[in-house]
Length: 169
Image (cartoon, rainbow, N blue to C red; front, side):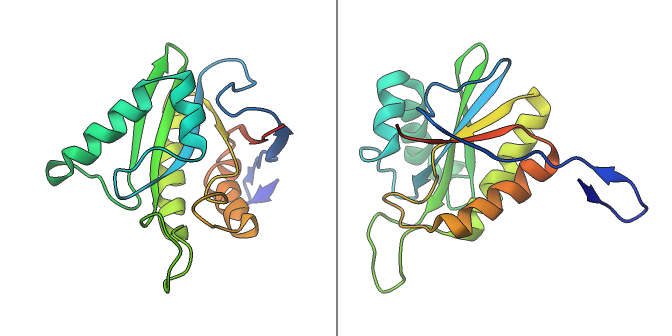
């Protein structure tokens, strides 16, 4: 529990980390499965393969969003919410610059992760949904969990949103 200015007490949900598959979220009620995408329109390695095996809609929507980027908000820090079942949405979060490690370091962009998670939190609050993620940004994007986890806690857990991270079994 945290205390805000004025003395009111805020509930901070603990971050659950379990073994399992983030494409099979373990919760009742509405659910958002969130993951990191790159800003190049590429979809073909890492967690997105598991997503595409489960549901075709997120890949189709992401590719269209990228194709039409001149007329929309596609870019670092943007989030696209795609409904895949009556009670399940996938959040395509653009938080990776390119796909390769280079002189600028790993492709993950932590400020973009924070922006995306904030958007996901708004959707979760509106839908009364829990949020489910793999260890976002820590695979191909090259991010470090010790930098990602606090962003998840600040954006979701501190807003009393039930959040589960899945470690692939």
